[in-house]
Image 1 (cartoon, rainbow, N blue to C red):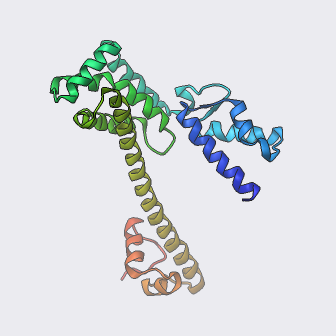
Image 2: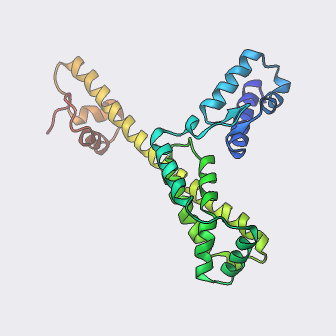
Image 3: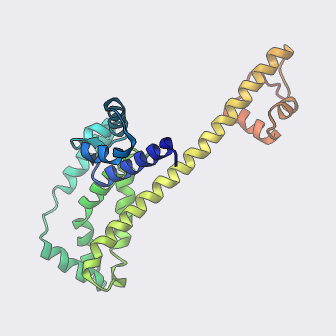
Length: 244
């Protein structure tokens, strides 16, 4: 494996580790990851800067304001104020509620949801910076939490409950991120098609000194007639194309 590939792979590994460590890495962790590649101080400064720009603090933990938009900060504070009115729970109370929830007690399941609401917030913080609003992450996490507490009866031990709930919350958030990423990919593809049609139609119109036909664009772009017509509709019409 060449040096460039090693560098990239280790940067990705550092990103994942930093996110898992509450958006934080020590400077020593970063330097150790690249110990055998002989990076200079200037290169390390670039790595540190890259990590910080991608919401991983180096040397000191990031604050919420370092990686959340103002709208997200406002939502987070309001939400924390709301769940902050809930009473604190001791470890014994959580265990008792978990045992009752495992036995199918609906009221205990409701209490257990309240007990884990702050866990949803903490997990959502780990998934920020991936193109999804914090409010949506928390919403998806809460849905997953509500489902998770109804599934505890399948567990053999109360000790498994917290881990199972956290995993379900993370699964819910990760699935939402994948869905948003997939939608964004479709949107990007459509936008590229619109731009391709607009650019090619302008180029041909300037060459022909007239508007071009859809058939001419089909030949010039390799796109289907439907793709070109869809692009025209999405863009509200393209001046260089003759409308039949």
